[in-house]
Image (cartoon, rainbow, N blue to C red; front, side, top):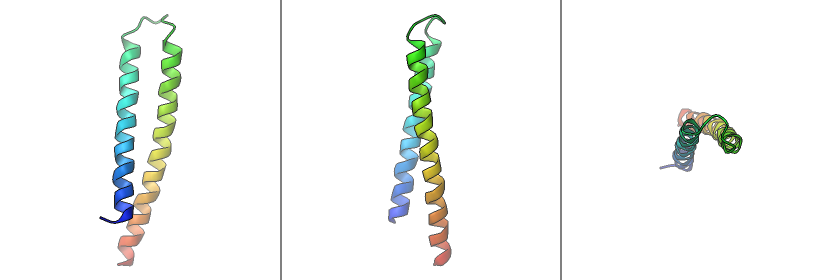
Length: 74
C-alpha cells in the first residue's frame, strides 16, 4: 500500500469516526428537553466536530486527486 493510500484510509477512518460522533451528539440532544441547559454546549461540540469533518473531507479530496495523478503517471 502506498503512502497516499494509507493516508486516504486513515482520513476515511477519521471522517467516519467524526460522523459517528456528530450522530451521537445529535441523538443526545434529541433526548433532552428543549430548554435543557446542556443543549448549547452539545451544539457547540457538534459544530466543532462538523468543522473538523469538513477539513478532513477536503484533505481526502486532495489525497484522492494526488492518487489519481500518481496513477496517471504510471
